[in-house]
Image (tube, rainbow, N blue to C red; front, side, top):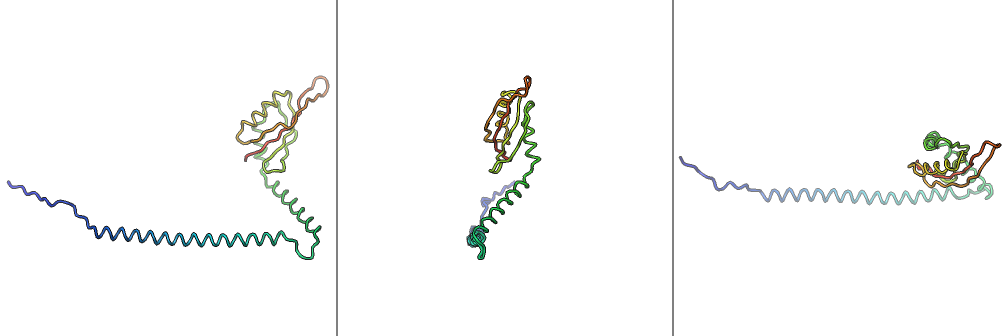
Length: 178
């Protein structure tokens, strides 16, 4: 029995073919990179052009039109600001905000007034409690909630209604995060 061994079993790679493929891939990637750089630069140019147009239009809108007195123009601007604030307040989801306050208000606390502040998300609470300890627990519960921040006791005072009825009237300021 005679065995033959082939000593030339080494795998041969066609290095020329591999170099051509690598060169083609690199050239393709360079073309895509150049195309993307061109797109980004054109978008940046378009963005700067749009910014200048926006500032020109805003300056045009903010300027007083000819034939209108300064007093009339200022009066109209204050009216517009007033109505924009009304629209902004009406767009608020009151039910979700009331639910947030209801969820953190413990037994023994009764809120008599809940009003939004001038800044976005700022609220003022007025209420009554039987003891100051209840007010303190309410402040701690508001502060511990993830929905409220900047909780501040603005004022508190003892109130009496007759001989048997005593309590605390308080005012709290806080910010709603939602």
